[in-house]
Amino acid sequence: MNTKKKIAVLISGGGTNLQALLDAWKAGALPLAEITCVVSNRKKAYGLERARQAGVEALYLPTTRFADREEYHLALRDLLWERQIDLVVLAGYLVVLGKPLIDAFEGRIINIHPSLIPSFCGDGFYGLKVHEEVLRRGVKVTGATVHFVDHGTDTGPIILQKAVSVQQGDTPEILQKRVMEQAEWKLLPEAVRLFTEDRLVIQNHTVWIKEEESR
Image: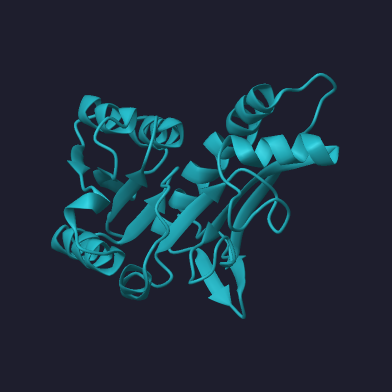
């Protein structure tokens, strides 16, 4: 029998993807998940309030409290270890993860990115900047990707992707909202569900999804 896996969500802002996770969890769509804590590097991140409203521990851990980035990530690693976290979810977390944290949770950190990786990803591509570049380049299809985190930027094995059409008259803000609603808010809970059900297998930098066991 599968036991519940403890989830930590790291955020820096409003927490819309966090809310999608919380909604799926509260609705019973993540039966093997336990969202244990939400951590933010920004005190006023609204995602912390979303966590409190859902009865989830909300933690503020600023980078400025530590001498350097490595100290920060060691503290974050220890915080997650203390809570026996099984999966770390990056949901709009604007701090580049350090080696101590990635090594400690290898194969157990996932990120949501607002494009179809390998397009419009890597250093400097986050938030609205992604959608601005999509429109500047004139592509017809964009989307979102959930991937495991490794030591590169948006280079880890891809778990799920979903395409979203770019429409005439789109602004970066309109496109961002469509990608969230049609892709991000669906992909992230699904990826968490698959992880908690032990159905994700990484093999040669490729993620395979095991068939669901018949009950």
